[in-house]
Amino acid sequence: MVEPRAERGFEGPADLHLHSLRSDGTEAPAQVMIAAHRHGIRTAALTDHDTTSGWAEAADAATSLGMTFLPGMELSAKHKWRSVHLLAYLIDPDDPALRAETDRIRASRLTRARTMADRISRDYDLVWDDILAHATDGATVGRPHIADALIAKGLVADRAEAFAHILSPRGDYYVALYAPDPVAAVDLIVGAGGVPIIAHPAGRAGLLPMPLIERLLDHGLAGFELGHRENLDAGRRTLARIARERDLITTGSSDYHGRGKPNIPGEFTTSDEMVQRIIDAGTGSAPVFP
Ligand code: AMP
Ligand code: ZN
Ligand code: FE
Ligand code: FE
Image (cartoon, rainbow, N blue to C red; front, side, top):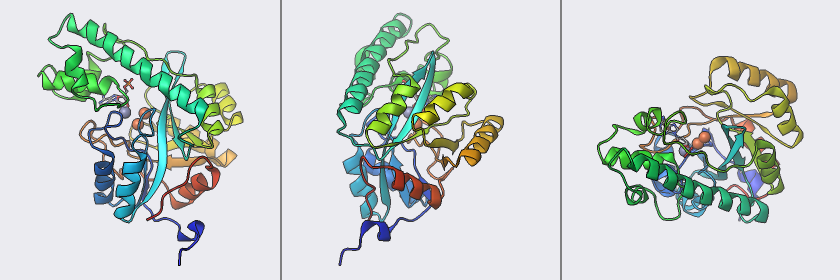
């Protein structure tokens, strides 16, 4: 007998922010689920930047390991010059408006990486093909792929070193990517039936201005990723208070990128109650149960 989905439920612990090589992680979607499982995770979301292309593979792998899979994406946005990442859970992957925007972002990422490569190649022995060799076909291209090409050439030791110098926004080679403003990004996610959560909202750049956070909440922002290694304590406490006062969703996740970052699956997790609230709020797609 097939039980109704809601009664089958899911198991914790949950890690709702993981990247594969469909964007800038270093492992295939199935491998990412295996890594999460190995670290004790039982509910996992794949949240590649600006793409949902890894969902099917990840869902198959997760459920065959007995895990629950939550479809997700990390949508690029920008407030003035500053990059803002919106985790988008349970979106409709075929929503035309969201699709058009992610297509535009990914196209811009490609030309932007190419321009950065051209600038870097004036000073370093690195060409565009070196970078392409480090991005899977169709992947959302980002600075991490340029970093991997620099590592392969022996020009830097790891991604962190590349980001600290050659790829830094303060350096000579940086080019900004196109991304919607955060209000438009929240609108798109909500319009696609998804649940928008600000990723790593209390990082070194500081909190977004409170009036902007208010506007985002008015537009359907559901909450904050409070558990993330890049969040600083003061900002995290401020957002935790806002979340408590407004009864918002709060999550914790690893932002695993395979070998691309030191982040380990399960280093922060999301409570069962919050996972349930995301599942209850999302209408664009459904969790996949084992
Ligand atoms: P981009 O999207 O091209 O602007 O690059 C940003 C991406 O690079 C984010 O997804 C980060 O996860 C990754 N990233 C940022 N800083 C670092 C770092 N120090 N080491 C490794 N990856 C990083
Ligand atoms: Zn990333
Ligand atoms: Fe991010
Ligand atoms: Fe991320």
